[in-house]
Amino acid sequence: MTPILHVRLKMDFQQILLEIQEEIKPFLKEGKVADYIPALSRVNPDQFAMSITLFDGTSYHIGCSEDKFSIQSISKVFTFTKAVNIYSKALYTRVGKEPSGNPFNSLVQLEYEHGKPRNPFINAGAIVITDTLISHYKNSKDAFDYILDFIRAISDDQTITYDQEVCDSEYEHGFRNLALANLMKSFNNIENDVHDVVKTYFKHCSIAMSTKELSRAMLFLANHGVDPISNHEFITVNQAKRVNALMLTCGHYDASGEFAFHVGLPAKSGVGGGIVAVVPKVMSIAVFSPRLNSWGNSLVGTKALEMFALKTGLSIF
Ligand code: GLU
Image (cartoon, rainbow, N blue to C red):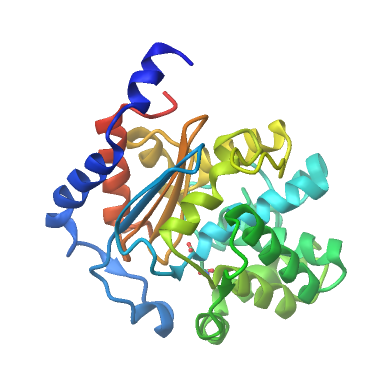
C-alpha cells in the first residue's frame, strides 16, 4: 500500500458522510422524481441515503440506508457482468462498447446502427443482454432466477427480491422499450420472444435494494472480480476491467462524460434514484435520492458523490 493511500484510508468516513448529508440539504428539493410509471412517481421525493463498504466489511451509512428502492438500471451492471462471464468476447457481436451520447431510451441511433445497441447500459443494450441470458438459460424463468441468485450471492443476502407492482407498472407503460426490442428483432438481434425478453428486463429493473446492500454487492467490482470478504471469484480480472470501463464511459447515459469529469469513478445510475460507484482497490459506494436531473440521474446522488470525491481525493484520476 502506498503511503498516500494509507493516509486516505485513515480518514473518518462517518464524519465525511455526515458532512455530505448536511451539505446536500439545500439541493434536496431540486430535480424531479421519475414519473414514467405510477409505481415510481409515488416514492417520497426527499429521501437521501449513502453507504460505503470497505474491503474488510466495515461499512458506514447515513440517511435511510436500510430502506429498499427500485434499482432500475443499476441491474444492468449485474446482467452485463453475468453475460460477459458467459459469452466473453462473443457478446460484442450483439452489443457495442461505446458511449451513446443519447438518452437512455433513444430509438434513433438504433435504426442508424442496424439494431446493434451502442453499449449494454442503455435500454436497448440491456434488453439484448437479457435476451442473451434467456438464450443461455433456455427460458426466461431460469434466466431471471440466475440473475437474482447472482445478485443475492454478491450481496451475501438471500432476501433480496423484486417488486411485482413496479414490474407490472413498467410493462403496462412499456411501449418504448417494446419498440426498442421490436426494432432490434427486425434486425435479427433478439433471439427470443420480444414480450418475454422485455418482461424479464422489467423484472430485473424492479429488484429492490437498499444503499447498504448495494454498496456490499459492488465490492467484487472494486477488487478485480473477487469478493474481498468471502474471497469468491465472481468474474476474471479482465472481465471486471471491462465492466468498470463501461461504467466509467457509459454508466450515466448522455451525462457519462459529465459524471467522469466531476466524480471520476466507475459508476452506474438508475431512474429509481440510486447510483453505485467503485473506488478500485478501496471500497464501493451506493447513494440514493429519488429526484433526478435532466439526464435521468439522481441529482443529489451525483452531488453527494462529487462531494465525496472532493473531500477524500478518491478518484481513479
Ligand atoms: N426500467 C427503466 C426503463 O427501462 C430503466 C431506466 C433507467 O433506470 O435508467 O425505462
